Image (cartoon, rainbow over all chains, first blue to last red; front, top):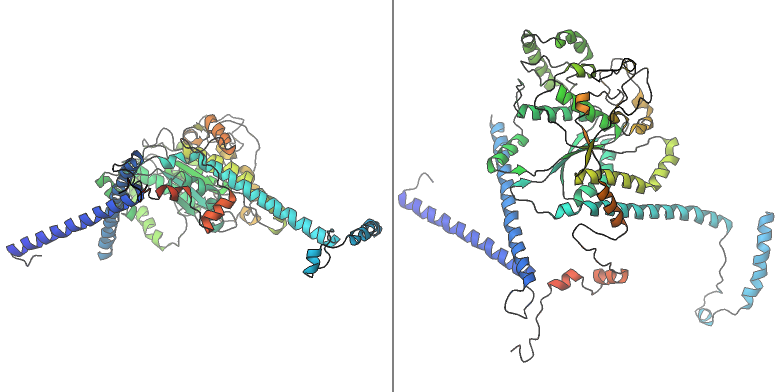
Length: 90
Length: 480
């Protein structure tokens, strides 16, 4: 990353951004798919019925919260690994 | 044999009658012999009665046990339904578990898994287990945890805080803003032997020194009883020069420690120094409530009948343990341990001293028996294997054998979780199937055949049915 000139760095950054965007979109569409499959099952009407709506809300909530929690645990583990790595290095 | 002949007579009389009846033509066509009902022979009867009644008792007991555990699980299950904010960690119980006297840790773990864990799981609680492989382990760990707590609360200590994974994780949590779930935690102490160590560790942690603190009058005490006796006169004084003496000694001990094989670190304070110890200012007004949990564990070949009885009456044990654990999990009712209950018995050999601050002169010679904590699960002690009761000559401390010595200041801070009368009544109603988990309806029972049809046939359970797409009339007119 240090050996890049300005234009290359810009290119790198934009690629990283695109990659992250793609990852985010994948996650999002996966979640939508899952929640749709799990919750929406009444196709006799156009609109979401009440039960489906609460189900969707809960589903999204659960997904987001669990990934947030997972993220927290990852951070902790990361810190712990850094610590043990530095201790091993000494 | 007269008996058998007389019993044979009526059966013989019955025979011609039965034989006279023509056999079922269908059976006859199939080539089956003439089938008649008769009692099996005497030996068979004995065999079937014994095995049958044993099996019956066993099956009955396990069914009842399952129902009892179901009851306690349902009593606490509403806790698992509450949602927890993502920046909070689940309430964490501490389970104290030690290998029973004369046996290994595995038995204790099995006991925990069998009776305690189902209820913790039903309430979706987190727990840490403090395990002790040998006598003193639990005491040492408990005390060390309390000392860590005290150091963290800002008490001065010269002990170098080693940075473990736990500390790093805790620091990261503080950094992210993750906190513990508010609410009481609790201590589950399994078995009398663990209970003794737990009490001892509690005292050691709160009353004992933090390694080598410069200001307080204490010292760290030694690994051998010889050192204790040598140091004791110095310890008692609150003099300033002491820390100087302490310095080299401290280092000495530090060097020794890694060389030692893994054994519990010796206690930092002696029971007879409790009353002279100064309470740290970081001590809370009340401790988290604790719950002693029974752990019957009888060894020995001759005790087999008693063990068999226990084996066939596990439902009572499950009931008792379930009540205790549920009380701790619900954590809405706790009482301090009774004090001054009775002065039941005196054991002249016991070296304990009365820890009360103003001891009654008549009581001073007797072992102090006026705390509930001392009598908790006391009967279990006589069940321990005799090899455990043997005391060796030059032994240091025997946590399991020494009497429980309590300091009034610590004892009065301890709390015991109890089930509130409302919860007790609710558990009763749950057992009678009138109620279910709080805020939920008991699902209608699924008949056996239906369950089989769902599991092994083409049936569909309600949940599956609910998720099936409802398409409506696609082929009809309004569908197009």
